[in-house]
Image (cartoon, rainbow, N blue to C red; front, side, top):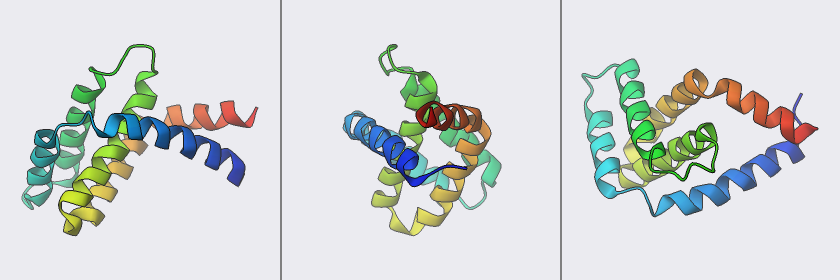
Length: 119
């Protein structure tokens, strides 16, 4: 069971990091992802894979003093925001893809992060 204060603390930390990452993500990366999301021939699995690849590439440029999982989580959320801002009609598809990506790739990290804040 997670209380609201724990969620607020985590959200504030992630938002602060997201603000730092926001300017570092090049428009080209966002535009490439927008094109993948617009391609209705791509399966949800394929789009999740493309999102994962973009996050992995961006995470390699993050300073090594930050946990890679935290960087990937924030990058996925910032990419989601940027894609939705670029093409609002993609909000539902990009949100679902991001949730799938986070569930598949970062679930254990999120559980550990919540547990650490609760202590």
